Structures are given as structure tokens and as C-alpha cells.
Length: 355
Image 1 (cartoon, rainbow, N blue to C red):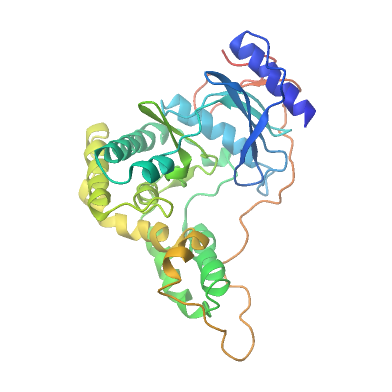
Image 2: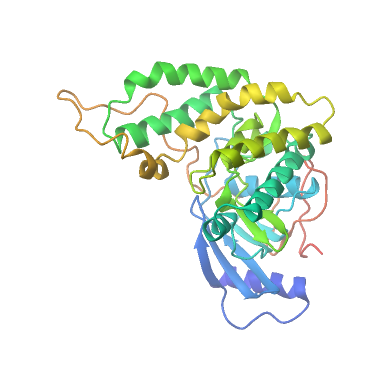
């Protein structure tokens, strides 16, 4: 851990041009995919270090670390308010980035409940989402990430297949197989609506930080290409912050309004028609372990019927990636600069932190 802490201190001194704090960075939380986060210093002179030394990887050796850095650059260059990454060593899984604070949209929903203040925050989130879809989609190359496009096989395996195994089979102890044909048809329907837009894929209240009058967006390393309705559904039907139907309808209207303003030729009628089909995965199939709090009173557990135990569901399985560390060719020791450059082009590597 000490070499990583020294790396954070070196970045701190180059960013703020002052001596780094003597105390070690302290852990502030765990993210998904084996990541740990640390804070060095105190706001407004503080940075966040991310340690991700065993990232998932695809069959080509592209890791979640590669995805994180590439998507961060694409969103930043598109003008999206994501934290600035000051230094990165993808091979070792060391990242140092801007500290955007600890207040999440989720916290504000819990604190404020309903009302105009929450409506204003969600309106801003939708405005930013439309901006990402319009500005980050051109040139976004999902082959630079370890994330497959949001197509039929992915939907069937990692959305509905996961729902069958993790919720129906593991939690409710139901036989999940009878639902397979319907879920196959749903996956086909979603695939037919595919579009080559940038897809954030986890656009929900726990990945949105509230920083003064603006929002900042986190946990975007799952970015890929797919139908843009998915991201809006992730926000509107968030399992962590349940919104009333009036606000949900308003946010869909707001998305269509902003998309028409930013994108000539945007078909709002088609977007609305396709929204329920793409969104059903977010509403019913995602986050089964969180959903159990809402659904178990309606769908109680029951014992499996007598006979052979149900085996693994066809199409279900773990998320892709071996968890091995695959060094990125060309990465040198020291600080790898995350500097300017067009999304889709190579990333600068240097012994300096981006200014």
C-alpha cells in the first residue's frame, strides 16, 4: 500500500504545488469490481486515489482500468462534468483524481424527499445525460473498453439471466426456466431497438455527486454503446431512490425536450414508444438483491418442487473478466498523464501530472 500512497502524494504535490500532507490517505469506501478509494488532504485541497490492482479483463486483455481511463477522457472531452483524472498507472491500477465530495444525489433524496429542490436536481441530471448522449456518442469506440455493446447476448446473459439466477432461483427458490422463452423474446425486442449511442449503463442516484449547484458523475467505467433509453430508465426507475410517478413522467418529458433542442432530427415519438421496452430491464430485471426488499412481500419464497434441483440457468453467469492484471503495453513507471486529446485517439503518457 505504501508505494500507492507515495504515488498519491507525488500527484498531490504536482497538482497543488505544495507539500503533501504527512498523514497517509485514508480509505473512504469500496467501489464495485474490487476497487478501493482513498482521500488525501482536506477540501478544497484534497484528491481521491483509486486502487484497482486486480481489474476484470476481457479475452483481449483489455481491463476495467483501461475502460475507466478511456471513458473518463471521452466524457471529459465531451464537456460532461466527470471528475478530472490527474494521474494514472493502468498497469498497476493506480489512479489519482479530483475530489468531488461525499454528498450523492441519493443522500439528497433521503434528506429532502419530494419537492422543488429534488425536481431541480433531477432536471439537471437529465440535462447532463442528454448532453452525454449527444456529445460523447460521436467517435466513442467501445472496442477500447472491456465492455461489449448492449446487444441481445449481453441483455440475455447479464440482465435477464442474472435476474433468473440471482432473484428467482437464489432468493425466491423458484424454478426460473418457465420464464426463459419470454425473456428471450424481450432480449430480441431490446436488440431490435439498438442504437450506437454512448451508454453510461449505471446512471443512478448513487453514482451522481452533488457539488454545490452542479452535479458530478461517477462510476462510468461500464460505458459502452447501446439504446439511450436505458440510461434514462436507470435514473427514473432507480432501485435506490424511488421517485413518484409525476416526477418520472416529467423527467421523460424533459429528456425529449432537451434532446430535440440539442439534436436536430431527434424523434421524440419514437423515443417514447421504445422507452418501456428498453426500460423494462431496469425496472424489473436489474439489481435483484435490492429489489428483494420491494418484491418479497409480493412474491414470497417457496421451497423448490420435489425432483432434481434446478441447475444453472441458460444464459446466466458471472460478469466477464478473469480478474487478472493485464499490463497495458507502453505504460511506463511513474505518473501516466491524463491529458487532452480527442476521444478515440491515444492517451498521453508522461512523467508529469496533467495541468
